Length: 618
Ligand code: FAD
View: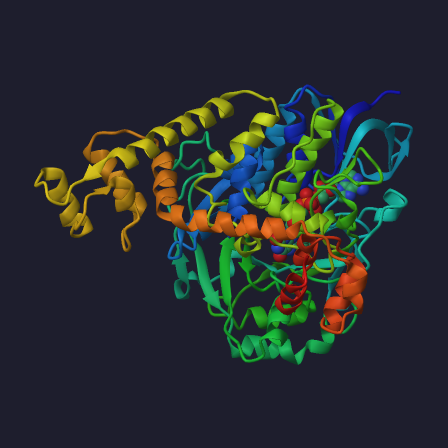
């Protein structure tokens, strides 16, 4: 048969593009088949990459050899470091991207891979025959592949809602796909479909920016791709703006509750708790009328502005009214109305940590079809599925990312150990080890995984050189001493800038002193002695020195938890227990956890239940 592939990826969103990019780095014949309506790696919602917890994922993808960081750097038009006033561990990079440029560069890079064929067709069915998959498209073409990765996003039996209007579609102006069970029979889906929504897009010429707070691009934020010049920008930089809703905005929304598809029963799907629509906020926080609205350009040459914070599926006339109550948007013209989309989601408890459907070897899932929301989450799963489909084809050992040293590992484990009943989003609190799983030390955390791939190139040389420099600088900060009683220039400088020395201390101890920024101190000290280290190395060594004691304690705690996690429990006894709440028992009956660790990771299990079970573990 013609059209044979080693790996075929269905869907060219962020999950599919990432899977295709990494698979094509192996010596394999790869196909990416994606519906003709949507551009590759498109950003149908907020055109921004990164964010809290997500910036870490983008850097992890980058360290594995992924696409997202490269493209985001090329298309980035406003950079920020989020949580800058908080600890280093929870700081994350967020880059506003030009959505036209993003997809253009992603398509360019993907089309440069000689062993990757990009096919613009809609798939209507997939079935397994012997050890191959047969893929049929709506136009009647047939493909065969040894491995298949399904990354169909919000498209499976997609249904769009704007007020009373309901249309079939994968997203605005895109045809929907067949449902999950029509695509592949016998795949288990979540009991409820999921939904997500997007705000109206506003004509940039109709906005009064003078009453809003500008947020300029931050040139001290490091680019995502480790081989990019760290602080050089490829595209022109522009500002985003901040405005707010008010009591008038919220009263219009509250007055139209019965016309809201979320509240009048029209939408059955479950929405993302951590990305609520403005109507969710109106009814969830009834005492609050002021919500941030970030006014963000969708591109340097695009007319549309994305008002971040007011995603909605209210009727068009209600959208027009409430938008115009917001300061600076009084004359706003809506070019595209907000809407919500409902879609089928695979039951991720049927997947392994390789993102492979356990009962159908060779079939992988990744992205929003797995019940996540967000480009970074999709891309993170895409790279895991792409790597493991490739390694499996080559007969090599799989790659499993550990939750203790990567956010992708946290996400994958959360997904596959839980039956999802709401969309999943990553944030730093999901990691037990977040003091260690930081953006600055991504190469130290991920290099061992990159090595497993057996690929070699500039990225690998760069990672090795960073690891070498880290080792040298770590030694240097231990050996460099400041003497409390010997008057020398060095001591004088240290005292003047960093406080009085009562005892001799090493540079490493100096970095741990309270109220000092360890990165600035180490940069200054390196400069004084003429030691030229890579700025990323200085940053990561300084932060690691500052956190060392806390991380060591966290490791001991996490080892204890790991030991507990492996202990076996009897879910049937727990499901009958008088000491556990009705709601927790329901979840226990549904998931049937076999170990304490699995019980811990079930969403909605209360601390009291965990304490009770832990107290009775043998
Ligand atoms: P997608 O980007 O959806 O890509 C799927 C691809 O698969 C498309 O290219 C499509 O053409 C192709 N495809 C589908 N079916 C077939 C088929 N049968 N045959 C061939 N190709 C097929 N994320 C957030 O984090 N927060 C939000 O608030 C948010 N709101 C959103 C609102 C809307 C309306 C939409 C549409 C998305 C929203 N997102 C949001 C989600 C974000 O867009 C996704 O997380 C991300 O794009 C998912 O990437 P993906 O690769 O899984 O799928």
